Length: 387
Image (cartoon, rainbow, N blue to C red; front, top):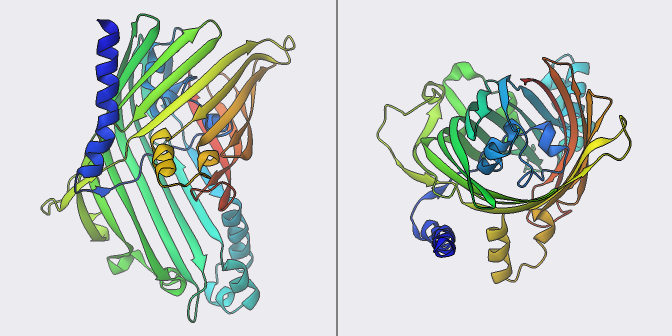
């Protein structure tokens, strides 16, 4: 009887993908909460889910024995290497953009570059204990792709911001730990093509925005399961299984406030569900004191999108769905992490200073469906208060 119930639940999950495809709604981007703890492990976290990052990967992890945490702040700053080089050139010009744009070498370096910067985890606070998880969070990032225009370069802007609250619960069902999240989301997203001169001359005092944006609010849901087989853990999640938002179009700075707009709702948006599967294996101690609590992880993420790609005879997207990594604890205060994210190497370190954790990470992400086509290299720094 229990097996029949599990099959019915699985069929409902799979059918939900078809329901979303039939509804006349616009698509909103998923939450992009960037954390050095996960990204330095190659982004493979579905079956591991240790610590507060489980809120964004697998709600079943709340039920893992010993996974108890209190977190009060988790601010992260992210910038790709192109953005860091641009900041350096701007500082050298003493913020004189008119001089920079007259420099043909500077303009030449801009063409084709992707600039990306963001922050997350301020605020980020909550509690995970006894199979229950509660958290509030934020995440914001802007990406600009500079391309050649008729007279001056054009910039393709992309904005994605989230402020939300998550409440989840996990419990044991036979050999499985199953869990679910409910998410209250306030989102801001949009993309636009504009002349780079318009962006450089933009002033917030004008009252208008340099990019057309959507503002949305609503509820989202995640479900997940973890099966423990000794030192081996298998994880399965469906993220945003039924996430709907009411949205408004905005084009002025006055409409950027959090929460519903005073204008009538203009439509409904959804976040596309994502089916993920992961494996984690606790290796244990390799060298006492030097390398212990070693874990290996691997994920296949967005499986439903890969199946859709195969149906369209796009056979080259599997690499962009693969994530793997390892974590090694050393000398009591260090955690070293390495991995492969969509085929690109990642690495990072966390220094645990009792009440403060300092984390650094280098990672790349693939911005196209085909691995190796459009790499974005990023540096991520984080200060967190997690116990």
